[in-house]
Amino acid sequence: MTPGPRRRNTAPPREEVLAAAMATIAERGLDGLTMAGLGREVSMSSGHLLYYFRTKDELLLQALEWSEGRLGAQRRELLARQIPVRERLDAYVDLYIPDGHRDPHWTLWLEVWNRSQNADADARARQAAIERAWHRDLVALLAEGASRGEFRAVDAERYATRLRALLDGFSIHVAIGLPGTDRAGALAHVREFLDESLA
Image 1 (tube, rainbow, N blue to C red):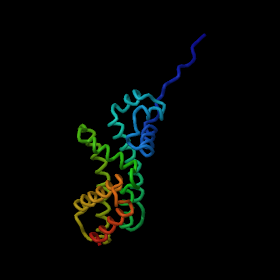
Image 2 (image 1 turned 120 degrees about the vertical axis):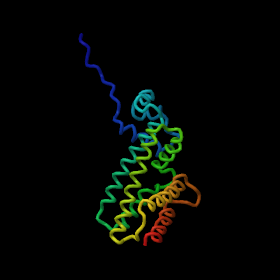
Image 3 (image 1 turned 180 degrees about the vertical axis):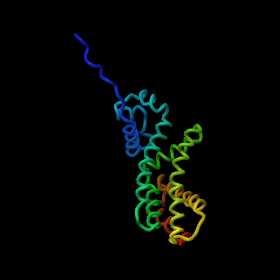
Image 4 (image 1 turned 90 degrees about the vertical axis):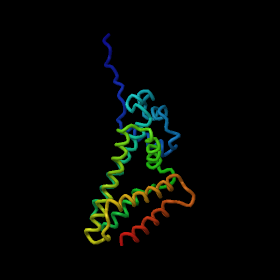
């Protein structure tokens, strides 16, 4: 009797693993994300996951990069709209600020940056690349707004750095559920600041 064909033990696509990780964070928070639990979700052993990702830190960073890739596509679509620059800037801010307490993307972002104190140069460079993409798009928006006469002239690089620090501060407060801070309030503060500083 000849043996039948060997069954291949194929791993699920990387995107499926990362999507499952984000779904777990959304449902149970970071404490609920374990390699064993994630392995059960995607029918892989935790050892198999570690073979592909090496460490949990690397899994988290790749999940953040995957999530940022999706946000980046949304951001590019928003910024390409043929509408006034201020409306696109408001859309940028709306995309930046977390949806609310325990927003999964921001929960992951905070954890990756917290762990980055001991990260290697490659991981830190990959995190910096995420930040540069947001910064570059914001600088381009500010420069376009000034060139079209919608905004007063500002140093786009410096203004973008300060605005993103403001956005990060409010976003962290919203993501951790700081009492007295919510998404609507954060958006109102940022839009008031934009009105006052760019008019």
